[in-house]
Length: 400
Image (cartoon, rainbow, N blue to C red; front, side, top):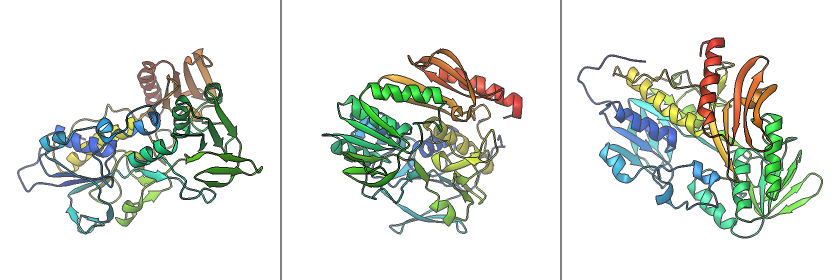
């Protein structure tokens, strides 16, 4: 990824669309590496970039006012000469003339463009569009107000849904979780861990129903196929869909997983890159385009894409070869920390060090004889060590 320093010439302009952690890390990394051309970050929300992990993890337990969750103060961006454009929707990408066209008519020229547009909540016909979902800061504030009184009904038993459930239950609200799969979180966790987590929620008063089919959902009630009605503040937490529209407008290849990129986060359109939740990078195990909807992965994408841009512009770029390709995510339920490393949901057997039911364990996850993931329960320091161990095992097998 290293390239020789460029000779003097006109300043190159980098434009980043998306104010999440991937986008802001890309901007910061460019400046940290000495890039002195114009850097503009465009976000569709009216707020400065903020800590999105707080939205689900601390929905009812923490102060979510903008000044509390903002990642960087205005002077941080000013000192680094990074232009932050808030409250602005990008309408299309003019790849031929290398321009970002905004809905308000403004146009930003670029020499390198990063699409860090994230995703939008997944919707299905049975759930009315008015049913709230959690995507951004304003969604979180609206949900806090809605959940202030009475029960909550969470449609979806994934990580986000269960984090919202834990937050609501911890605040004293009756909570019901409705999940279509036979168990919660079986796509991302080994069955034994998923069962233990469900029991932790039930022990804290959460009523979990699995294998249910939703026939209708409004903001105040959900009806399942057996005719049961669940009343309360309804929240849809059934996953996200990557925001690939701008990439398609530029002519870039997309897939159901997101904007298709190479290992260095380049799209197949010159001078356009993608990072974060919208980027579908080759999966280390299968080679297929895949995305990892995780804060740490998005942060690392920001560093990688900045280095790629610098190299492609002929500038000296930092070495990013030591950045792990192994996903690492964390979640907290009722004060219990859980870290997911690699791909534990794809395992067919596990090896347990400790006790899963007491949430004090390191669970190594295997597919056949291959170590592919881990879950660390109540052991916050174990996640990074397991990430190294899984990475070394993967390198031995496939050279990643």
